[in-house]
Length: 100
Image (cartoon, rainbow, N blue to C red):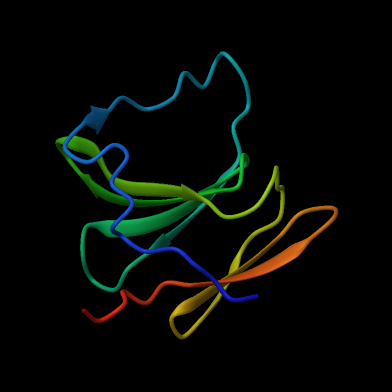
């Protein structure tokens, strides 16, 4: 508890990523649309929380941060928090952007 994931972690800002090679392996991820927009939050099997834009032109990653170790479980969202679990831990991460 008490961890935070903020869109200020722009490790890949400005780069457009190709979709993964689905024939190479069977990646697991859970996607949640953010309202009626082209933005989504993805939790992948490596435990990375990804903020992205998805539209007909492709996938544009806005930020990515690791919140948990390898996971197979779907995350839960409540208000501005995401709950994620693995076989050994459960985390609660705030999605709020800190005020400056």
